[in-house]
Image 1 (tube, rainbow, N blue to C red):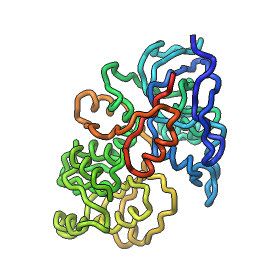
Image 2 (cartoon, rainbow, N blue to C red; image 1 turned 30 degrees about the horizontal axis):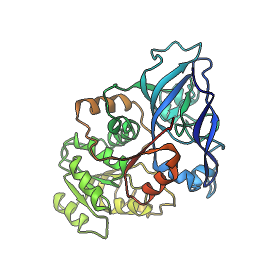
Image 3 (cartoon, rainbow, N blue to C red; image 1 turned 60 degrees about the vertical axis):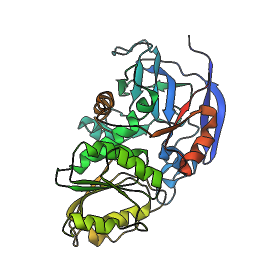
Image 4 (cartoon, rainbow, N blue to C red; image 1 turned 135 degrees about the vertical axis):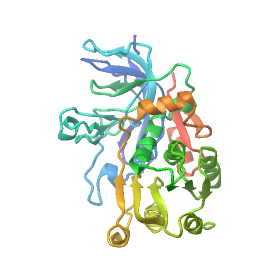
Length: 358
């Protein structure tokens, strides 16, 4: 029997997130109720909390969020209840993760097989009809994309399945070749996941750029051949020039979320190079677009979510080909969500998992 009430973080407005008791959802139709084991804190959760225009509207953006809602989309848990019409393979007690997006199944993109570009774009944790994992339980709709997680997979790996799936998709978009010099800007959780995934491509060089020393050290442990500071540091441009006959890097993946990293990449990349953009920015990135066209004829690849990458990431965690050591730095009770946000903002930690209290 499920309890009637649960603790949850409820977003009422920009900066107005409250730890409250709310009703436990129940499964109808072919839905699943998941008992949350843990939910990771994403940079997007923090930017939404801080009132980012990408979420709440403004600066030419329509509002995406629909409050009140329960945040959290990096969800790990166990099946607690299935609806009377559920015919899938999962059963009560199964440990699973769910993709952050619930595709509608009927829009043009879904019909074309590009479900991750689904037009309604319903992601857990931003709308009141699709609450997220900062709670004791979460409802998974019929169209949710769910994946079994091995019982013996530790939390330090299992909580990283969703972000590493996003990282893997970015690396896939980059089309890395063995002779490429690859730069990843930003060594947060997603950037480090990209380093781990890109290292498997065994390119000529894999360079991590980040202003924080301990994150650069971690990037080296996860497979980077070099780890450098940004423009203010010790010569990333001369390093790349020396490797490429002065032409520039072949691939630049922007994962920092800082507008300056876009201009940096356009300067560092070679003519005909591949620029991969992943981040959600809190401020506009303004650049000279002539660098993209006339000056360098660049290929620009956007990255959205993590299509078809959850299962490969789970396999990579199981066989050890995707290292994760050092990325999960904090496991906190759900009620300490504001503390988690502050740790992340100050870069005093990396991935933080929030665990519901009984």
